[in-house]
Image 1 (cartoon, rainbow, N blue to C red):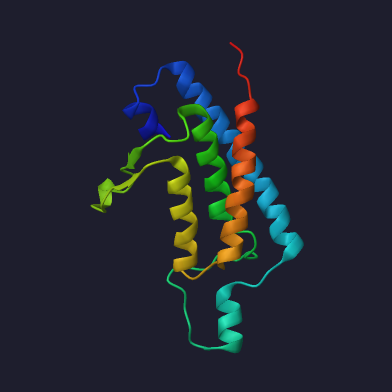
Image 2 (image 1 turned 135 degrees about the horizontal axis):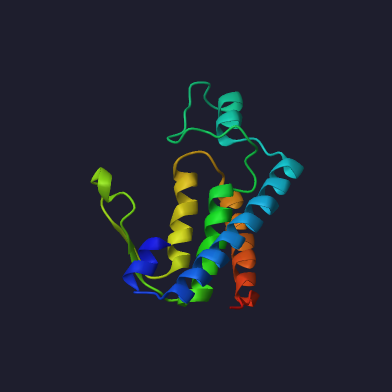
Length: 155
């Protein structure tokens, strides 16, 4: 969020709006996601694959110790990015410099949604989520993030 605010030369009111809406979206998405995880209690890919396909299989990403469905990273990121869309617009282009300090390449996006989609898919490619978990997380994360458009800040 800070990169977006700096690059857009946002004033204090815009910064307040972005941080409040992103924070509320993150909180709400986290609560909803974790309630669903423990309601459905779906096995992770590593558990299923090791039991039925290949006992030595390992995902590329370390598997978290909580249920698989829905994909939390996709859920929360989609909510935050949708909230950011309500503040900066749905076609806001930006370049992410988060990992410049590690000399990783920058990532450029045509919208916040494009960034959230890539984030979710990284969990499928990393081997810790199934695609339907990421897809539903993206849908409901966007619903929560879109609700942030209704949040009115008073000064």
